[in-house]
Each structure stands twice: as C-alpha cells, then as structure tokens.
Amino acid sequence: MSKTVRYEIDPSNPPPLTEAQRARLKALFARPESEIDYSDIPDRGDLPLYRPLKTHTTVRLDADVLAWLKKDGKGYQTRINAILRAAMIGQLPAHPRRKAVKAKGAEQLKAVKRVRKVAVPTAGLEEKAKKIA
Image (cartoon, rainbow, N blue to C red; front, side):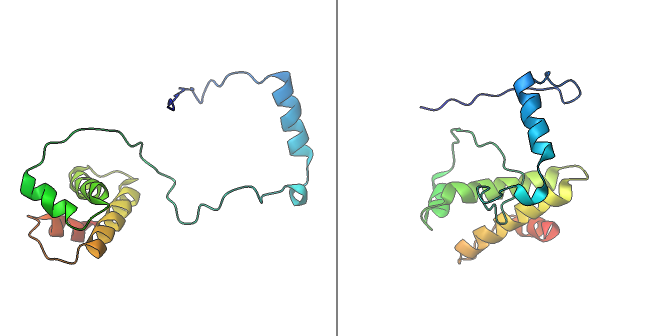
C-alpha cells in the first residue's frame, strides 16, 4: 500500500540548502551543456503539464444513465469525468488559464465522441462542447 506524502513549501521562503547540496549544485553549474546526459529523461510526448489528482468517490447514478455509460465497455469512468469536466468548464468564470483548461475538456469530449458512435440526447452538452472547441 502506497502513501501519498504532501509537502507545502513557501516559494518565497525556501528551506536553506545543506553544504552537500551547495557543492552538488556548484559542480552541476560548472559542467558545460555538451556534457549533460539527457537520455534518462522520459519522453513526455504530448502529455499535458497539468494532471489533476484523482480521488476515489462514490456516486449514485440512475440505472439507465450508468447502463448508457457502460455499454461501450472499459473507460466509462473516463467518460463520466469528461462529461463532468465539460460541465465544470462551462461554469468557470473568465480566467487566463481557462483556454488551456477548455482545450483539455474539448480533447476529452472528442475522445468520448470517438468512442461513442451512437447519437444520444445530451441536454445542452453539445452546445457547451461547441463553445469549448
């Protein structure tokens, strides 16, 4: 069982560096760029920098809604999340980062639409998706 450990650090008041940390940083800064080995850095591809923390929860859904979400098989929880994110984005006030968040929501909705080949009434969700895209 893994535990999530969270630390809060005030960026304006970081903890002091130890002498070993100072020596290591000094050696790293002295190295020329050509000597730095980047091969061990994993390729992130097109992964977004923003990855929301997932949490476990229990939600009560109508049986027909759950059946509709599950009928395409694996990934129904991701579809639920995409639908809820689109609804959340529609309620957000204007914010400088809203465009990036809207893009993520639009990508998720497009993924849901690729999986879902059947037209189902979505009660206004299509209009919100068009605003996001």
